[in-house]
Image 1 (cartoon, rainbow, N blue to C red):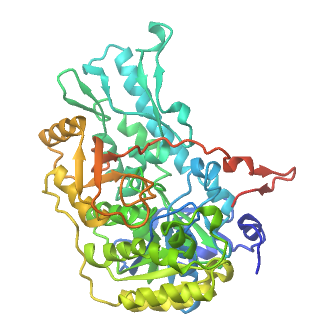
Image 2 (image 1 turned 90 degrees about the vertical axis):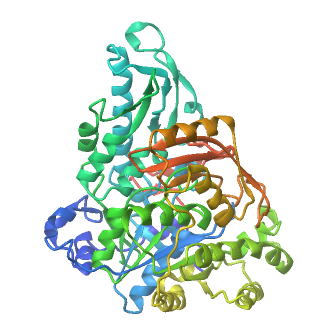
Image 3 (image 1 turned 120 degrees about the horizontal axis):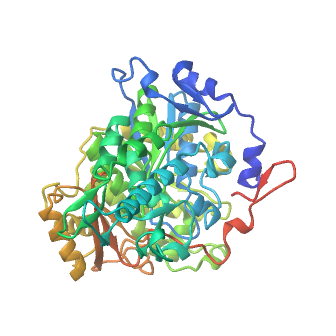
Length: 559
């Protein structure tokens, strides 16, 4: 088996000019804005018949609860897209952009893996086309204008103790979570407690992903609540007259990016990586663009079905009208073993069917979420690792099939699209079934009820506990007229509960809600649970330690 690193495989690939990839879909040169030979942005305003074009079928790739052993959701997404094209189905993929924080932190890259990657992977994993930089600039322009307004006389009566808008940077940096700004005299602003969040947790990231077009983007930016006045009235970006300039900074970022897979499948990469602390889905514009030009579109949402898929359905699908025809739930033998209690450093010690059996209820809950909570047909894709045995694979298949759960092993990491053809055929069959899509809560439910329904139905928990602070925040938001918005719950990705140590399928747990605020521009209420943070930190051995560049400009160490 080929054991080259991901970046080595990617660097040996022969890429087609991106204009040719666009032509495969039927996108004409007028709508293509080139970023070199192999990257482009697509301007949908330059596609004359865009709105009238029919849309293809949408397939969502999600996963079981992630573990440090890795699941390979993006790898399967890419491989499935390649496989569908191999069997004659006009297919595109629509996935999230990698964030610099995790690239240099834990993940070391997020463009798929092995022979199922999007390329040029070095560009995609680093600055790409500058979307995240534009989001950070727009975010921090608003922060600068907010503090400047206070410095220049505070005409709006903003209470500096009630500022909700944070600065943003696309890097994991715990040092910036809590800071004090404006020190050293009157000329340097009004001293106050401040802090940063990672760019992908910015409301502007969610706005970019959920906006229908540039005008909708600007209107959403206008609604962003940045602070409250001394008499508790919300202050918006529109009140500060910042939204026009912010939209100007985002005029190119809103256009979807087009690249290709190793097998030349068109790939739209645009927006929102994190579903544990944010919205975590590919942009509506990119997904819809893909659907306009492909018969099948494979998209993904961050982490497991309790996070990314839930937000995909409850937020993205509600707002856009998109409806998935089928879902793929990615699982690995390694992850099943970890949920069965095997430590990461013992995963390669041989077969352990008892641990797999103990871990299977985690997978089954994710299947239940797709089929029963949201009403979407699902197939389990076992992303095979070289250490998996045939006995282990067959054991999982047998156990799942006893419950009527379709299971397909795939080897896209090792064999590219050829390793996903069986999965592709299964997905086509599922996508032909009649849609019975449902939501776990209604928009007119009280805020606390929405959260509780997600906890009970999607997480499998007993209920919620609201801190005193959270209760006050809910009352304030409902009094201000935001009670009918969907909820975006920030929660650990490592457990159905808010405790990352509760692996497998925990039951009868209570989720503690400690903080709630409205992202009025994005159009949802953010719910912080447990000890989740919107600014992650670096691990003891950051992936950045392995990333380097040679004298001739060749990047090494990405994986």
